[in-house]
Length: 239
Image 1 (cartoon, rainbow, N blue to C red):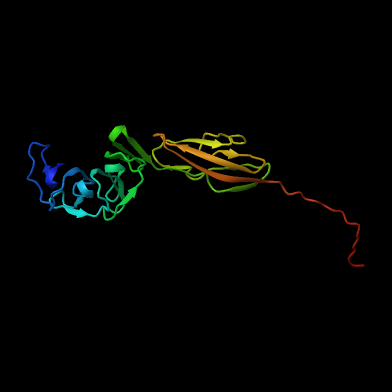
Image 2: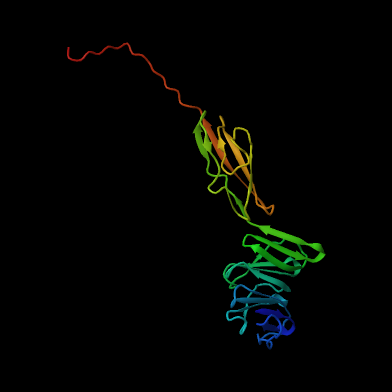
């Protein structure tokens, strides 16, 4: 199946690879539509002028408007699953929904340029392109240096969370700072034998170059000293 959108809210469908396109769907609007995306075989969305977002539950037979809370020209839409979707548009607009389009949250794109297209190769990594050569990338990598730890000086302990990295796209690379007193500064969970208080910082980088950082406190306490004191008192029992 394929879909095409255009002027006067036109939405047309083909089921034979484009040899034949069905008649335009009546969506009750006359705005210019710019993009259409289907999350599965039945659930689809279309976006266009004046913040228009339309939704279908039945493969495109009937479409209903959604409230975007935005009046810009919306240019592209992409869903990573049935509930999570993104829209790009004029003046740096990026919108996100986590409930299948019932509500939309504006995201800060960091640019005033029109964003023509948006695409997510996986749920955590997205790209948007726009006017004047703008290319944006977002990804969600999480670094987890683990909980603070306390040991006796002269002992050792494994540091780093379980897992030490998540989100983004694996494999990950790791860098621990400072690297001294670590068994290996470039693995997720090194062993530390630091003899004094140390703040360890973990930097995680995924295969797409997205980074995240976290830190933890490592306390090395002096070992307790046992003291034995001799007594001169003599106590005899039974006399």
